[in-house]
Length: 564
Ligand code: GLC
Image (tube, rainbow, N blue to C red; front, top):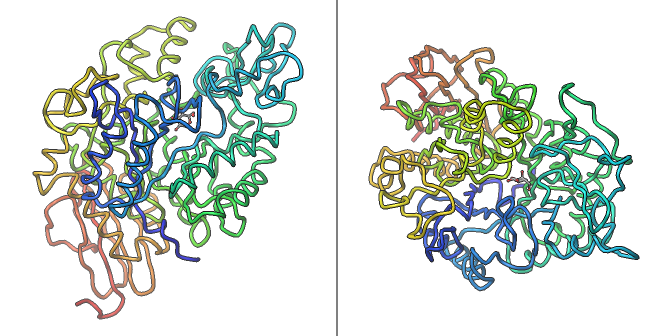
């Protein structure tokens, strides 16, 4: 496999609205990010992924774009963006933009135009359909709840929106839509952008005739349609064309966010021979605690399932495709609260998760606040939540389905995307040093204990541990290119695996439980060295280990006598 710059890179993911507010208007902004670049350089990351910063009415916090060529006013100006790009490049880092191709805002000029009657070229930019005897054109349910169709009085027709009603889906079967989007991506790449994160991008090819989906429950009017709209029949053709028209012309890195994709399909999207995309962020490993009725229904975390899924991706992509390694982002609750212990073992479990995911093959993504072990939040009232998906869920469950509010709030505490969107915790000053204005969302009350300032001052902090992991990735090629073998496959509490490159072997052992675990790893190695651990080294070697709660250990082993 050809070696490329982004394969050794670590990405830091910024949610601009919550990162740092430099002007006191209550919203994070581009100048606020510039203030923190020295910190990110100190952390050791290579690429900064900016959540969407384009003009937007913010129904879905910037994922509803009304003008792809303008910067959102709350975030600053194009000059601020150019300064940010320059400051990132000056520090030897790269900038990745988040691009939304599946839909625009309903306030985008194309959509406004598309409602006009008569001979109107924009009509076909979206999915406008007549009603089906007064009902929606089909029974699809939006990913954010309720019908995926909205009736518009001016247009006298329904339009499709797989996400919120303010996010109408673009029709990628229309060549003009494709050309407009290629022009837009080239505009940003010509401005010196180094990478693109493509939002929800395996949804671009819808099935012919938009057929009904099968109802999953008799008391529901609308049916989930993910399996019908993901990985559609034209999707690979679209990426091949996009690659030819855009990606292949620049030395960039692309990562595609794709739900409902198996490892085998992931390989098709990312195998360089096929000239589509460089890498993928999948959902399969994050969906393990979702119940049969979707992500709001939570079932117990099963480590063996989690291991099976990640191991399958590791093996399937090895040598051809490329994986995005993550356990946190702006759409997921914080992993330390979700599958770890965010009180007694917050530090240990945060470090353990980081070790487990970052020692695999792929590009690690660190989501803001993850490096200090930020946790989920429990706001006492729904009025304090901001996320459109969360608010829709609350309304539908309480008003339409008559569930009691306390039960619904419990679901929200576990899964709301706002868990990840509270303010970045910089220090112990009001609003955790986010900014002086009234912030758009409340701060997590634990900021006195969990913040960057105190983490910087403590050499044993999660933050310093992340620096160490990043440093190891730069130093040991086996972390980047080694092959992968799962060890202790059936163990219900320990995730262990082996990476090998030439005569170097890495053994990664992580305890996912609060109980001690005794495990033995018998590998025919000559020498072993404990590279990193989240507990004091007790001198054990891997033949017999008594792992403490959430303990993580990484051993470097050599087959020959080559240690210095
Ligand atoms: C992606 C984004 C998410 C957004 C959705 C619609 O999944 O990560 O935040 O709501 O796409 O654009």
